[in-house]
Length: 90
Image (cartoon, rainbow, N blue to C red):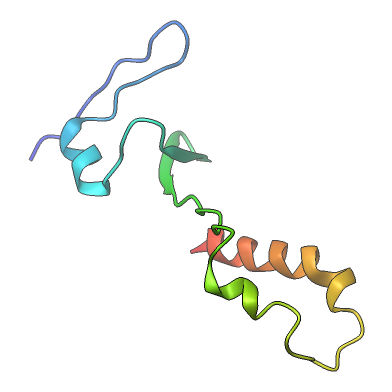
């Protein structure tokens, strides 16, 4: 099967072939991460996170447990960032 070739516009835009968009489930407004790999570029679909609704049942659980850890609030952002870095490595 031939490798698709796309043209880059003056603004640096390109069109992802429809077969690839369908295969990845890409739609208008979706995001792609762009990686430089040697003399090539790698694109990877970014899964966006849907914010929780105000009436989501998870909110009833917030604050209902105790971890016994004293630095949870202070370290929250660091823990989230570490998890995201690991997810992006995959």
